[in-house]
Image (cartoon, rainbow, N blue to C red; front, side, top):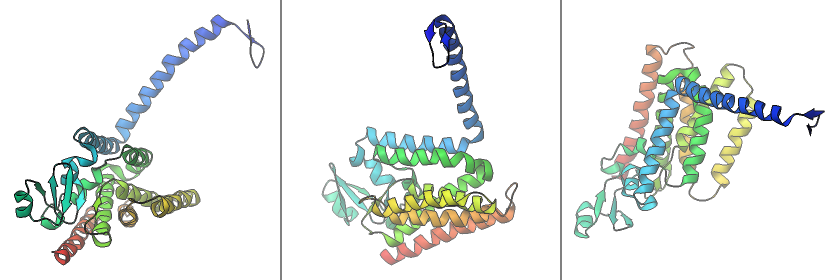
Length: 273
């Protein structure tokens, strides 16, 4: 017998109990994963897409990968020569220097306003964003449903890109899902308010993230964070007009928000042309 905190235990009995507990814990963990797949397919798909893009970038050179030039948000075109990237170079000058020309949004690479929200270079960056998406996504997806949740993520990312395009340096490069994640934070705040939930802890958590945005060091896009947050607040307000399935009115309003954001970027594009 072995002395235990309360009384004595038989070593064989303890070993037998542990042998029964381990398989039970493994089954519970598998059931939890399967339950997440069933209840939050959009969240897991978004995480998988982000990780797939990050792996592609990592395997093709990291911060020097040409995938970054193609997928990141660039207001102006870039020219890749070797491992270096140059800005404000015309297509002709880039070709004459033996480089590879990559258009920015102003040159027609409109896909970057969304693909930048799936683009990460640093493992720490994608780690924090995907952890936040893992915690926020499933509960929002259950409340909003798959369609409205995907719209929330995409439109929040688009709002973040619009803010970056207007407020950031036109020669900067912006990557990351942070704008979309801040949109999810804003949406959770709206939903908690509409349902009478605990706002104090949410506001504290949001305040910490906003403080980190401004004081966490160089390279953090406060424009993308705050733009995504504003977009998430507005989009969640529209999405919560319907408690059940989204009505045609809700989808119309969400579509108008998307068109308005694209128009806002288009106006800026004309200004930078």
